[in-house]
Image (cartoon, rainbow, N blue to C red; front, side, top):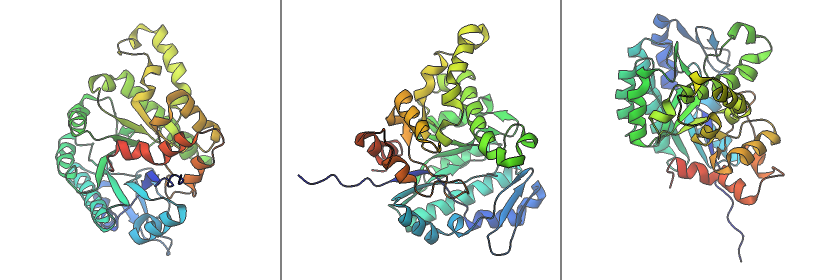
Length: 335
């Protein structure tokens, strides 16, 4: 009896900055307070308000460099997404144009490598009517398999009713939403020691998950699927505290279920930087809700994302295959 073929690893957390998006910020961004800074060969960086990116080298921007990096990592598929500062800092027209530029370039990358590169559509959620228009357009682009969204949109939490028409259409299109932090609470306190990323991002994810639960979004849209980055951030670890609040406070009992019962309404990636984190997700939530991710290719990204799962001492072969490939293939309808 022949051995089973190795999984075709699908990285669902892989960032992409197309040159067309960067050029548009360079040309039109200053009017909205953003700028692109061309460096000394390390790659450009972006500034929008308090957000400043690292230099964006070729692995972020060049498709051929990406494919070479994927081959080296043993990754068959990237599900590409934009990252900070996304587009919400821009005035609505520019935010829509930036979203379209990203979505079109991601679709062009898919056309070059149709079996290897897919994308999550960027929407100008700071202008929900424009977000709906771009959603309708982007959903028809080749390679689009979901929607990308920040954990908060300006001053509006994800439970704001302004976003409900967008959620309704995303639900009808049967597309998952992948979340990612952009701005974080307590930015000034977290600026030292890289804490905006190390602590700020995980807590932003927990805050967003709590708003989706207590704000009624998951009840109102029962078929809406949401994927949480960085192994769910702080949310899976604090859900018991949310549950206790729901048990003891009448003002939190308007939701249909206990907070702990919403754990499986979410998917979670593998970016927890600890075998115990991944073990907890599998034991408490289920291996079928976990997706491979790397955070390609930021400084603390996994360089060997497949091995994080394949070499995990406590996971069964079935769970490893599900996390590395089959969960994402099913969720994103990759065939």
